[in-house]
Length: 383
Image 1 (cartoon, rainbow, N blue to C red):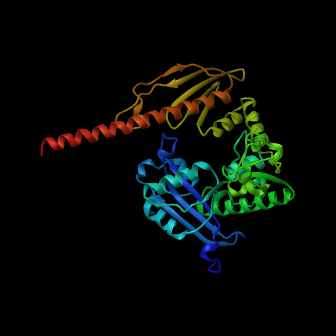
Image 2 (cartoon, one colour):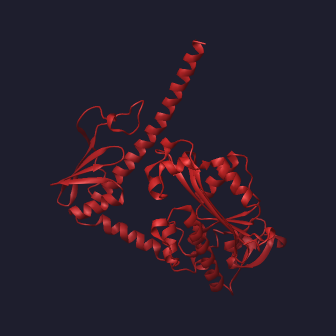
Image 3 (cartoon, helix red, strand yellow):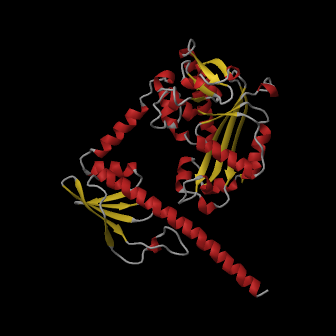
């Protein structure tokens, strides 16, 4: 590894595993819990590796999904070093690189946001989002490809029990990028396109937008430039132009959903659908009792269709969020039935309760802030 000199570092592969605070969906509710990186030269020889766990700011905000996906525990997360310490070490370890390769855009945005928070600067670089690149060369732009699916389509061997564990995922990311680049380079070795050096957009030779471009901004390049951080012109960049991988991931995913939605409502199939949306169910005659992380529901069935839906009565509580004592009376109220298809009803229930959790979480944060202000005011009064 020491044979690779500082100036030879070219690619920095990074994976970030993060916790999403309950009831949030955007970057403001996210904190990294693991980060791993691999640095290589231009020939993809590995020069440096890095892997650290990161302590979150508040153990109460660690979600069950985080613990399950990252194969860890609250105790292990809170024993890790602080985010500032880990990110500072990360920045010092990788002092030079030209490209940062990450799987998706949200992970990259989170990394930039957290580094900026501590005043840690990033080296000037080109960012390569592999999920977006594969969407052009292997997909049709209609649906994002998942990381696991991409590994399977590219025939990258992986251990399912270690997926979403940063130290392993960054290695899979490295293998996936190198293999896809090598295959794409071979399949397009005699194909060229035009890059606008000012906008870094790739165009076909006959693109109308290139006619008004100044000659000094035009450069003929290989199509593998898509792996250099260049973007595709929306006007001339049709799928047939760039697509060289016949990955049928979208059709397979759609078939699976259609299969679930069209199943006869036997007990086994009802459990499959509920498992798909991660809700608990109990079946009794023509009634299906549903429990989500927030509340309980009863779905009445008749002739393989949903006849009616009932939702348990709840209200928000000032001191607690999404706990059993939120219930203020026994009983259910009738809910407007979104569909007579069981699959769509369970999808609606999952979405409904996820929205309620988000609203109550935000309300809970405001109430805590008001309580703190009230306590501080009271303390000032008696000083």
